[in-house]
Amino acid sequence: MSKRIRVLIADDHAIVRQGLRQILSDIEDMEVAGEACNGVEALQLSRDGQWDVVLMDVSMPDRNGIDALKLIRKEHPRLPVLILSMYPEEQYAIRALKAGAAGYLTKQSAPEQLVTAIRQVASGKKYVSASLAMELADAIGEDTDRPLHEKLSDREYQTLCMIASGKTLTQIAEELNLSVKTVSVYRARLLEKMRLRNNAELTHYGLKFGLVE
Image 1 (cartoon, one colour):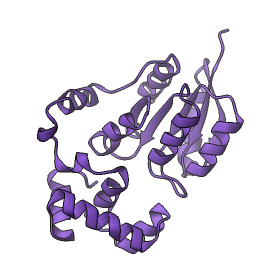
Image 2: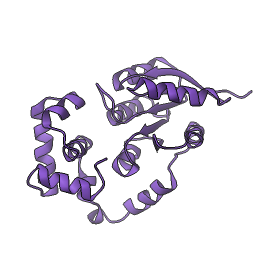
Image 3: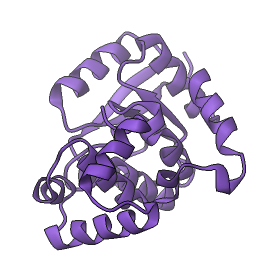
Image 4: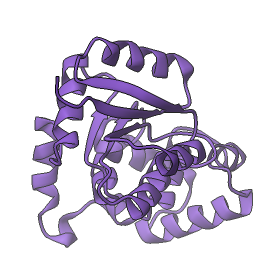
């Protein structure tokens, strides 16, 4: 039997981790060799173990998936990180790929798609769905044609999505483990970059471009 693909799962929901472990336990060429419940733990385990693929959520406490992804890629450039998220592709997929992800899947994906994606990134290739491939093709267009939110930093973009979903600055600060003052700075920057005036206009923009669940 060929070498099994050692998978590290990073997700803050125990039920999700258990479900993923159950799916992969039935696959002969894969094994879940470790679990992390937040971004900090995922970083630590990536340093301590020998992994073939990291399967990681975007939204986690302590350090979000995009930040953890960048650090893992910096320390282990050959280690593929496959993002598995509750967020639709149009919200985070392109950002994740630009940050170094080997692929992006939503949690609504079929188990067979997950298995295919893990095998593909473990072999050194990228994995994108057909719909995401079309988005990537569109994103290659002129910079001036890109929606304003695509020009935001990752933190500014997160702040935009959270404000548009109705969260207060205090709630955002707690979720991102930042100070309210720092979140206020991100809000001010994104309002300026997007030429918007207030939270109501941010929410309208988020709904218009499908950035709110």
